Length: 155
Image 1 (cartoon, one colour):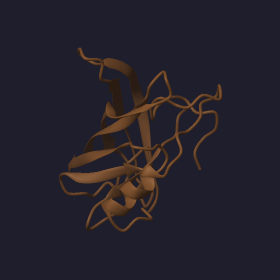
Image 2: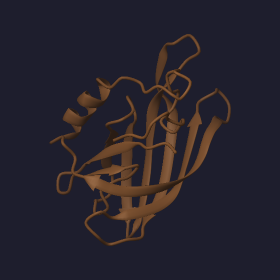
Image 3: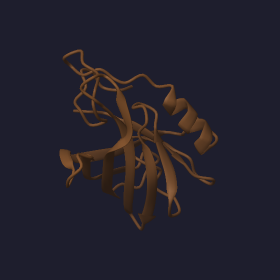
Image 4: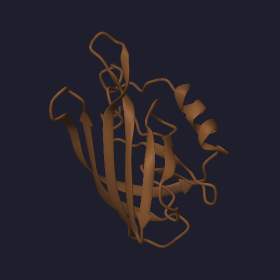
């Protein structure tokens, strides 16, 4: 299973979750991955439901990257009330292809709050994200997208 981590950037309640988001945010908060470069977006919460969307840079066949050509939509619901809130939901990932978009993944996901975001602002988190190296898959190739399988779980 693929493990990814994102940091929410909210003025009131920053948090970090494995494949997740701080579960007490106002509408239109930013989130930034600290495990996959260029993966970030916006989120909103209504009750226990969290709605996230974002973009990531895709890896082209020639080894170059195209910023914001990969897209992500995640909808999940919080199902536990504890210091380590958990939730589950669905994620869709697609790549622009000059047509309707090529779907690369439909994934059922589980979210677990694992700690607090180490960044004080969206700008600081975005800057750190741009310094990340692209992860490698189980075949030793650079991963094309955030939900491509990993050879080892993220810490």
